[in-house]
Structures are given as C-alpha cells and as structure tokens.
Amino acid sequence: MTYRVCFVCTGNICRSPMAESVFRARVEDAGLDRLVEVDSAGTGDWHEGETADPRAQSVLEEHGYALDHTARRFDSSWFARLDRVIALDSGHLKALRRLAPTAEDAAKVRLLRSFDPAADDDLDVPDPYYGGRDDFEECLEMVEEASTGLLSAVREDVEGQMA
Image (cartoon, rainbow, N blue to C red):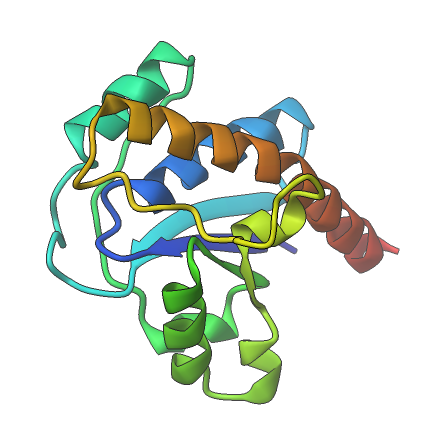
C-alpha cells in the first residue's frame, strides 16, 4: 500500500516544489521511497504546465536536491487517494479545507511548519516569489526544518498501516 503526501502552495512553482524535493530526498534517505509517494500542486492554475521558478531550482540544486517538476492545480478529487495534504501557509490551509469533500478529508490538511517543534507562532512559509535569492534560501531552511518532523509522522503512519 502506497502512502501519499501532497504539498500545496499558490502557483506550484516555488514553495510546494521545494517542499516536494526536500521531502522526497528525506523519504529516500529513510529507505521509505517504495512506500511513500511525494508530489505537489497549487491552489491556482496561473502557472499550470510550467517548470518551477528558476530561483527555486537554483537554490535546490545548490543544496543537493533534485527537481523534475511541472506545475499543476490541486483537485478536490485527489483527497480520496491522499493520506496527507501539506499546506505551505494558512491561506492554503483554509482553501484546501474548504475543498475537502468530507471532514475526514479536511483533517488530512496540515501546515508544514506545524511539524517543526522550533517554529514560532507564525506557521506560514512566506512566499519567496516577489523577493530575492535570500527569500528562497529562507524558504528552503523552513522546509528542511519542518521535514524532519513530517517524516517522523509519516513513518509512524506507514508503520501503523503495515502492522
């Protein structure tokens, strides 16, 4: 049985592809890549069909992460096959919970930074799109820090499914 995680931001060209790339690497490093599928999407279709923002690609590459990505829009029908839907900010969280067909599906949606015990009260990953390279670096750092806790939660879920 495959466990599925989908990261969601606005246009699916900056934050969510970065989170997808980082988390996929963590899953592979943990030896869970045959059990866990990782992807991403956006709440809107503005960039559908495009690759990730070149700045996101550059920062990921410089930090050793691979990314083969085409932007797409999240569809509510996906809830049926997803185990976790990870929102990058509170606006995405609200939009995704409104899209959820059932209360059970809405419960699958969590903020990424809610998995980072060191995160402050603001659990949003700021959108780096209108900023500079430093904003993409900051985004990556937040994603990396939260990915450790998310991986622990996913591992626990996967082990529970296998028991």
